[in-house]
Amino acid sequence: MVGASAGGVEALRALVAGLPPDLPAALVVVLHMPAGGTSSLAAILNRSGPLPARVVRHGEPLRPGTIHVAPPDHHTLVLDNALALSHGPTESGHRPAIDVLFRSAAIALGPRVIGVQLSGTLDDGVAGLVAISARGGKVLVQDPEDALYRGMPDNALRTVRADHVAPASALGAVLAEVVGEQVGAAGAMPPGITERENTIAADVQPDPDPDAYVLGPASGYTCPDCQGSLADIGDTGRYRCRVGHAWTAEALLAAQGSEWERALWVALRVLEEKASLTRKMAERADQRGSTGVAERYRGKLTETAHAMDTLRKYLGAGVQVADGSG
Image (cartoon, helix red, strand yellow):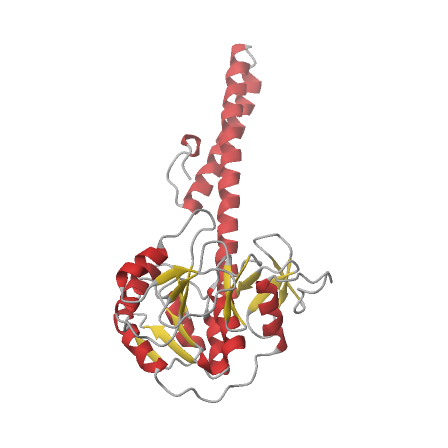
């Protein structure tokens, strides 16, 4: 099971180039990608190494010697030794999400799972690696020094003990070696809350209970996706809202930063419109000979211009909003 985000295409190409043509295991790949459109990742990986790559189809079995690639806007899960697609709630703003794949594989396959974390930002996949390790599976992580974006590898190494850390170009050979090792005893099944999260992501049969997705006490935070209340999921440092959107702390912080920036751009545009309207009203007052009224409008214009300059400094824009920038 392989997860990647920013810089992941390069890492994936390097990994699959090092795989043997007779690998007796299936690879399932999740790469963060936009929801709209199509992905050429399967075609890219098909040309990058000896194994065939194909887009996941719902219900198909895991095929040894095959690279199964998650399609856009669908979670990919391992359920009963087969692959499943779902349109379940996003996790950390992603669909497909790496945690969904890793977590489902840990539950379904136990110690037979190898989780591979590649280049990317933030920490999607880390909770899934914890589940894989707890079930007796193996954890491989791209060397952060080799990754174009080291956030995901660094977060993985801070949270879970990796069995192997190597550059992407060496991970194919390492993976082939680990596949050939004897599988150890299965670890304990993940806590029930992990299985509930797996059910939510699978989205097979939504629970009619309105509190079914409430997995803990209220955190006091708001879901960036739906503006609903987020519940604190135990001591995992993760959150989930009433309709199922899940967030890690890092992803939530990043999303809140984006919301804050968007709010500032909206405020700047409103001030730009206010300044334009105030300027016109001052000009009209001058034309009517209402000098006092015109001066009051110019005073408001000065205040508005100062507020606009302050916002631009915060945004680091240095450009006029009226031309469509930002």
